[in-house]
Image 1 (spheres, rainbow, N blue to C red):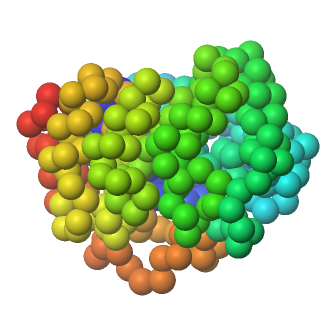
Image 2 (spheres, helix red, strand yellow; image 1 turned 180 degrees about the vertical axis):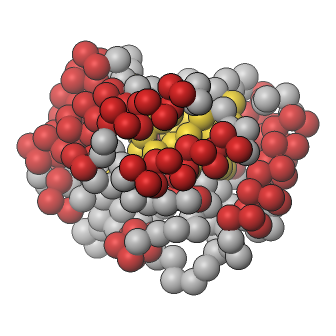
Amino acid sequence: MHGFGVHTSMWTMNWDRAGAEKAIAASVKYGMDFIEIALLNAPAVDAAHTRALLEKHNLPAVCSLGLPERAWASVRPDAAIEHLEVAIDKTAEMGALALSGVIFGGIGERTGLPPTEKEYDNIAHVLTVAAKHAKKRGIELGIEAVNRYENHLINTGAQAVWMVEKVGADNIFVHLDTYHMNIEEKGAANGILAARDHLKYIHLSESDRGTPGTGNCPWDEICATLAAIGFKGGLAMESFINMPPEVSYGLSVWRPVAKDEAEVMGNGLPFLRNKARQYGLI
């Protein structure tokens, strides 16, 4: 998980054989250092096919997901463990390095009340069991802090750190996202500093989830702070171009956030790479 990567939502959210071939070929075309694969339906993924493509192009991969409602860890821990173990196995079979994202809950999971101790205890139990299974498979797990409108459980870098330390496994890390940080943190630098001891992965996503460099994210502050803490993890560009209705609903994306792939990859990717080079991150 080093260098510049891209989330497969740029090309597909359906990781079938055709989607894998399209996204991996495009990632290679744009010179990405790794790819982030969205595991919306892990059991259906042809892991051997993906692994062969990744090995052919010498392209590392990270997988990510949010738990479906039937497996929300806060209320259905047994189902969450089962779901994560399947996803971890598929991640390992593909030859990917980690499984990250909203592995503690769902995108769109909100009770209308503050989190309870019971919810957090259930999540910690799920992640403890999942981390042990992931350890056996040589996989790391990432906890992504997301904004309050998508989930009520872990919204800030500090909360993600608290959960990582509550679980206490050495193969769990913090995953930040600049889009969510722009909503939740008291300054992007503070979020990064709070997570610094456990931070291994960050989504570089604009304030409207569109083309980086065209919104309100403070990119100089973000890159300067990452450089100040000696960040050596994955920098993954995330902009949602292709989303099925259920994902659009969870993310509350109701209109196009960018014109097309060419706009994001042609303008946003060079913008982010230039910022990263400016601050010595790549």
